[in-house]
Length: 84
Image (tube, rainbow, N blue to C red; front, side):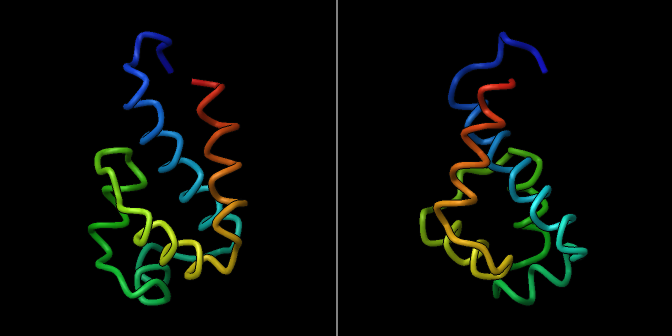
C-alpha cells in the first residue's frame, strides 16, 4: 500500500483487513459473519474494503460474530496499520 494514504484512511483499511483476515482464518463467508454479527452482508463487505467508518458498537458486533475479543481485533488492526 502507498505510504501516501491519509492517516484516517489507513485506520479504516487496517480495520477492514483485520476483519477479513479473522473471518477467512475462521473459514467464514461474508454471509455467515453477517448472520452471526446480525449485520447486513453488504455493510460488512464495505467495512472490509475500508470504505466505511463503523461505530464502536458495530465493531463489537463483528468481533462477537468472529468469536474473538474486541481488543484482539483492534490490536491486529493496529499491527496492519503500521504496515500501510
